[in-house]
Image (cartoon, rainbow, N blue to C red; front, side, top):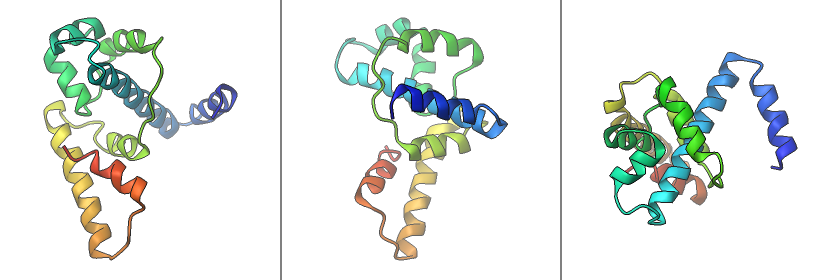
Length: 144
């Protein structure tokens, strides 16, 4: 999707509350992916340093990376830090589960995301419906 197509999609989504919620979760998933990639590439030796750079406490960084939503006062700091970095691919399954966990207390989000992914797999398996490999991999990534 090029920049014009993305802008058109965002404009359309911004017309409704549901679309705005969806866009917000997509942006948070993208920011999570950027921060996680930064950590995975070893650009910061310790989580303390990453947290300081991003503008979160170590505890909030961990919760955010586990799927918890950012508080409004954290959003701008994290978005500013992520602004000049490339956006890695983001799973649509992660975004969908994130929407379902939006109002959960941050300490429960990781477990809720994991349980939803496990439940989804059980539903497919019990119905004998084969999940495509790419989708199975994305769902499995939700299960730490």
